[in-house]
Image (cartoon, rainbow, N blue to C red; front, side):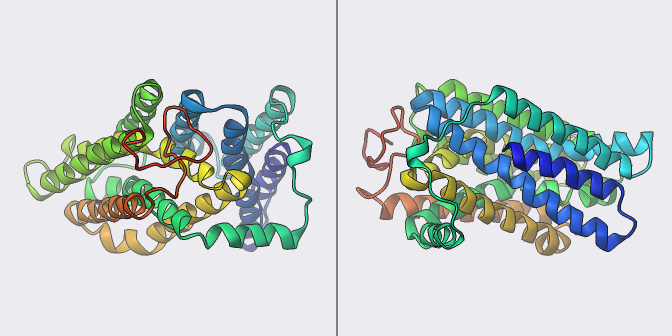
Length: 343
């Protein structure tokens, strides 16, 4: 994590000083690669150090930050561009990366015991990634998790069109959309943490799905009615989706780690890769097609959520007796997610 944050800070400086677009893109690639270290390792550290409700509460905090990041970034970027030229954004990120590196170095102890560490061998690392990625059970759950977040991320990726084109607002009005969505994600993650000791993980996922699906359906109805296809009604659906996602996403992430307890870092890497590839595809391919109207955007979000819900329940039905507990209250290493105790 320290190395990743330090390289991220240096890559951000490279972006700020880039003399041309190709150089900027090269440093952006390095920036993205180094940023992935914190995303992956933070989850494995939680599972290395904690179990049960404590692990779920901390994972809900990580999920909250994960959801807040892409939502609040455009707001901060807009403020920085008001204060100076575009390199100022990357100078800000370089300082942020340096602070993270120093904080982790000083405050976070190493959580992975030496006797459990795998030698840094490219072939063994790639072999482990391929082995995890080929597990049908892991594939289903990873895809379900990614699609569940995709229902919310579609709106994030479409934010410029959603705000400026469809709602007719200005470039400094992104807060109108992102503040409610961030609030929904924070409240959902907080709810997950508060219920960690009272409700099983499987029920939290189902509850989050019900909330998100209800929000998506409401968003479709509001978008189709001329009287409500405007503010504040236009952000009601996305906010409810974010709230539901905040409830379910931490349990998804924790269960993905426990699906492969001997290779949690690899599991976190593969599942995050799947989610990021899906989000990139949404932004590049789906958003231009879906963001032609509020109704089409809402229907697309609904479709993504339905697909994620379907995959999750296929995972549950096909995995009876053969999968780790899904965020159960005690989080044992390997129990049945679909037993009455887990559900």
